Image (cartoon, rainbow, N blue to C red; front, side, top):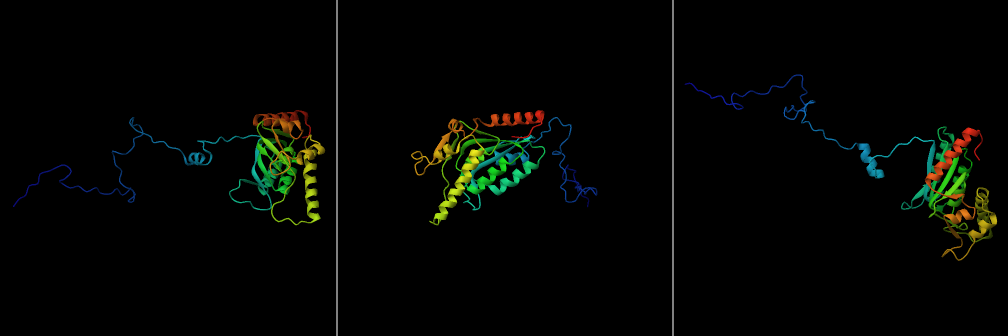
Length: 273
């Protein structure tokens, strides 16, 4: 008995696809219809953002953060200056143990010739603020401070510690006596300690600005201006008129001042004043 089979494409006869010995057995077979051809005019390229770009969008809200190589370094002091006590996590803080190593590194960096200090602080730990101010004032680099928003309390000596100090027209600075938080022992020694610490702040500010000691103490102990405390709030030009700040200006003025001081230093060969 004979049987005849009609040939039908794709069904009969069955021809199995034998694996290629040179092909990875774990790799799926290539589909000729989906294989990209380099010279195919209909080839479509799918483009997307790199991982680094997406991280920039997530962290900074920008597609790409420009990388600028400059001889001027920006140092920001924002929020509350944290000292020996750790502040609550909801506070925006600047830790002085983070700033001091940065200042040491900037002092040793040969490629850095100037430092712009951006200030927007409510104050904080007195000894930590004085430590930062002393470090700034002892640097051999050209330094300019810019008070943006506010430079209150212990932020005042930090603002005056640089070679040149600027304040934005809308920025404010609060000058008031030193205060203590928490448990205070009510003995004469406590008052003497506060008085000596107050003298340290007054001495530093008057040595690094044009304000006199009598004027600074008068602003510090003025009554009637602050609701729950004694002191004075200076805004923009008022801080310049008292001699506390050198001038009114912002970022461009600060950068131009440092560039001018660098050029003058290079041409004259003098020391930083």
